[in-house]
Length: 197
Image (tube, rainbow, N blue to C red; front, side, top):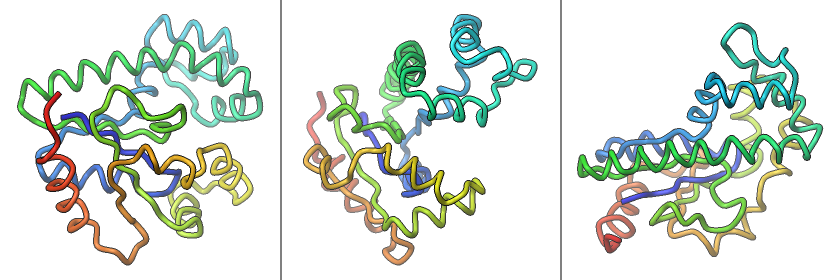
């Protein structure tokens, strides 16, 4: 079973994924996978050509420099995604196959899960929702980003109301609603009862 977990910045996708892992799921962190690819020679060469050699310090990518250049230039962002996203997709496909061989669910955590419509590489889509004020507070606490930058990033993400028709289940992570009972309900309703492909 392949489950996509999406949600806006600060919604709490990672928290929900950790709870899914309590039920035996393996979690694929899409952002982490993308960051790990920056050291691959072919990806590094393309990234340096696109963004400049100073986005690397030694063998490490400098995320703040990458973000600064990408978010100010949508053309560069699309160019990077054109070679990075297929490489991430390959890693996810292998991850999901490995999880299936182990008899475990594969969870794909991705902020961009529904950006281009319902993905065809997952069986079930779960959306993590949280009020905007709470999301902003969470992002400020973990990243130290200024409010205008957080709001700008939120505005670049899909509007929640416009994408919910692609969603099979919602987890409300508002700091009040208990998460574990919601995950257990989703497990029963969406996962155990979902036919295998």
